[in-house]
Amino acid sequence: MPGAEDEPVKIEHDEREQRFFVRLADGDAELVYTRDDPKLMDIHHTFVPRSARGQGVAEALAEGAFRVARENGWRVIPTCPFVRKWLASHPEQMALVDARYAGSIPR
Image (tube, rainbow, N blue to C red; front, side, top):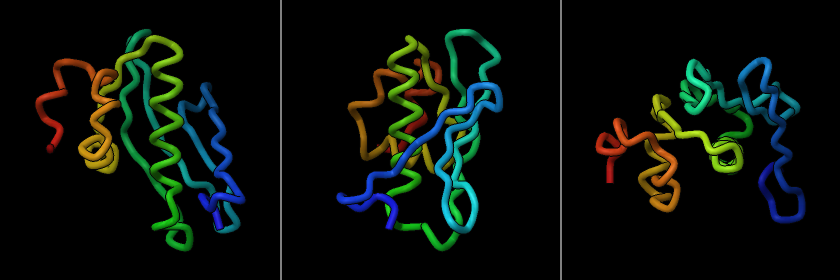
């Protein structure tokens, strides 16, 4: 099961395609973003195949994207509804959210 302690989720990053993904039996789970500005990552969409939902895959994708943003000094625009909801329960990640969007995250 992806996300189980004995089998960590392997997040891959395809910078050319602007996505983070996890290969699963039923297809890739992915978090898609754009980088129209060198210092911004706009996260648009997160998708997990139905068979893997509720197993922490989307959360792992969000964590991976925020880790890469932090490592590269990027700010994040959380356009994706899942990521906006995830941020509400991960306030420690709010420091990476572009200030223009921080006030729109539910608390």
